[in-house]
Image (cartoon, rainbow, N blue to C red; front, side, top):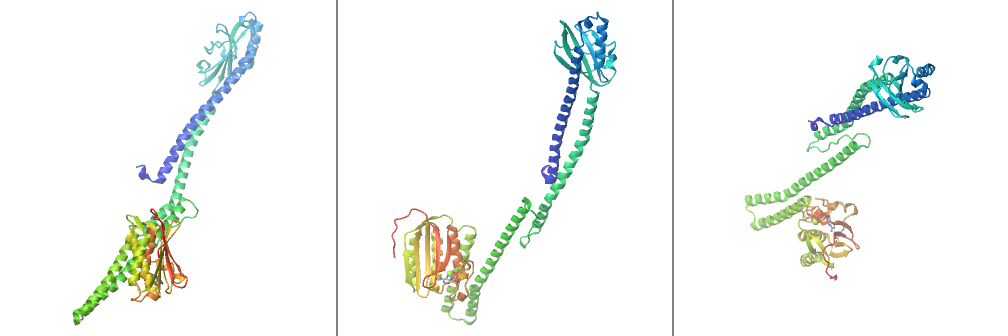
Length: 468
Ligand SMILES: Nc1ncnc2c1ncn2[C@@H]1O[C@H](COP(=O)(O)OP(=O)(O)OP(=O)(O)O)[C@@H](O)[C@H]1O
Ligand SMILES: [Mg+2]
């Protein structure tokens, strides 16, 4: 129940309960301290009065032999006593020798008998005095010429008790009011703080997978809630961009797949209708299904890259060997002058993925070269560098980042014969990224362009020897 009560209720209850405990403890401690302060004031007054009376006590007064001495003592006792205090002087036997007026005929008020020069106190009720409050009784032990006696002073606590009662009433009324105020303040403050959170929640609820273009309201200020809203909006923007990218990818892929499939169907219809040449038909089927196969393989590679499965079990790959095999192939089939500068470099990765990326680069180079294709493998510090260049038209500076995006073909190569699907360099970029590296294009000295792939070199290095 507590968990489902909500932050607002929980905060209010917790704050009020904690404060109630603190207020109660504070009130009790305060009252106890106040009482002891007030009563010790009474004790102090009693002690002073007892000491003053002690000065007037004489042997004669104690023995009762001298009426004048008794008279003097009675006067001194009467002078010290006031409306709120009564005094007795007791002899060694505890008999009352002198007393203030209200104590006439009463025995000793207390049984306390401290030793000479010592003071003791007690708080008692004295019904004999006919008043319903308590009294602070102070007893001073003293002696004169080896005769012990005690001065007893009873101080009324009526005034102190009245103060204590008022303090109790004030605390009793004030504390609940304070608790109510804190409860209301917490309720209001927490409610106000949570209002933007509720607004964010309601807006997020309305944002469906179909329309990720909604954004949550960002409250003014720089607090946690506004930071949450900003972060949430950034996340929504990323999700929207990812979703848009995915939709574009699916649309582009379908579009690319449609054309070979349509060609195949048209060819089949023509052949079935007019009984055209079987040789022509099979050639067309072979070429279009090859195109389809390449496209599907590229799409698969990119889907795998998106899932982070491009590089499942990395192994040591001799990059120089991969490039050497490709160089040999190019020299025999490309019809271009192929120059290769290769040093042994080992990387940690997937040999098939690396070979596919290299093939994408050399396909482009051969396709665009005027006459020359250049391959280079080098090691620069901890980095394995693979460069593929050609002396073709090159890539304009403004397009050099764009060509690594999916389905991007530059206009000049849109023609069916020369152009591919625009996935080759995207796969190269994904492969480089999966291997912890990067790829870039720059201008080639003497015309054309060079694509440079940089990968972290890894694995034990064989002794370096340049080969051409
Ligand atoms: N060596 C190059 N010289 C000039 N332009 C190039 C070169 N390499 C790539 N490009 C341009 O970059 C575009 C993207 O290249 P990418 O390899 O991604 O796609 P593609 O070659 O068109 O198709 P695919 O490789 O999927 O068959 C190409 O269409 C081409 O215009
Ligand atoms: Mg290509």
